[in-house]
Amino acid sequence: MNEIVSSFLGDSNYQIEENFSGHINNTFFITDEKGHYVLQKINTAIFTEPEVIIENMLAVAKHLEEKNYDKPIIKPLKNKEGQYLTYHNDECWRMIPFFEESQNFMTALNAEQAEAAAECLSDFHAHTYDLDVNDFQEPIVGFINFKNRLTTFQEALENASPERKETAKEEIKFVQDNQSFLDEWIALVEENALPARMIHADPKISNYLFKEEDEMQALALIDWDTLMPGTILYDFGDMVRSFTNQKEEDDPTLGNVFSSEYYEALKKGFLANLSDKLEAVELENLDLAAKTVIYVQAMRFLTDYLNGDVYYKTHRPNQNLDRARNQIHLLQGLMGFLG
Image (cartoon, rainbow, N blue to C red; front, side, top):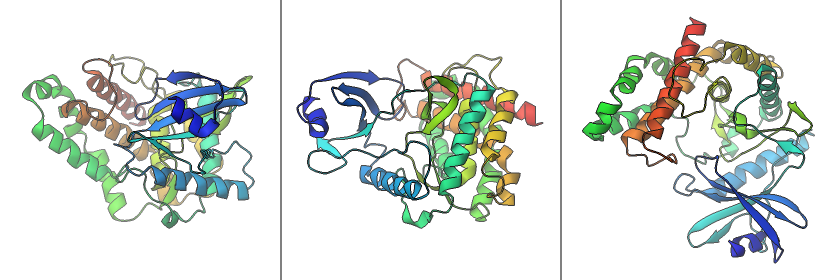
């Protein structure tokens, strides 16, 4: 670790603290006499070309600077060799600044905070909607290709152990019985009905920073690892998936999971800067996006469970199955609200 930190900061005295909240990368907070930083080991099994992450981040940062974007902009730091990535023992590391006087949350505190975050995302999109998506690559190929997600689920189901299939039989049945959301989404994609835009692709609540002195004021949208071309509806749907869930993501219990108040707040905030920029087909399919993204996330957790927990980090048995159950309960709540 000393070699990795010194590659970015030189021979400084530093303190290090690991953050355990992420599913994919390993994250550490670094403090030295000059300031605070975020150091991450990029999971190259997922992000097979880390250079793509850096290229996308730098291009979006440049665009936002040119647009006089008034929120903090994430720019990776160079190491002593002038590179943005440090490779060490087959590991890939990068460092970004830590934004001072900020805080973030694992769950939204209330509808007001949810609306503030949605408006922050809306503002981000309002400043990037004119980017040429052909100038960007996917850091995770097929990440929002839901047709492929379905195929992967079907393959996992075919190859899963009898024990896991039996344990998850109710969840498997739910996914199979509610595929109509996904079919409708896939039809829109295959008809090229949804405009391609630069999207964040992971706008969950923990990827927003709020002011330290005002937890209702969104300061910045962070974690730009998944910047990619896609449909803006995915960002809305994933935000709904994250913010409206009133329980921990791996809490499989029923009752008080979905918040309709948060849902309405998110839609209001999301449209604050985009109502005049989105096309009719996008405005008409916000609800479908919310249902489909939650459905697919339930399917992804279930797929990983059936595959033996090889993608998402787990800390206990059946955690991925419990995550799938949580998403199913969330979707059921949304379905009941939308009718």
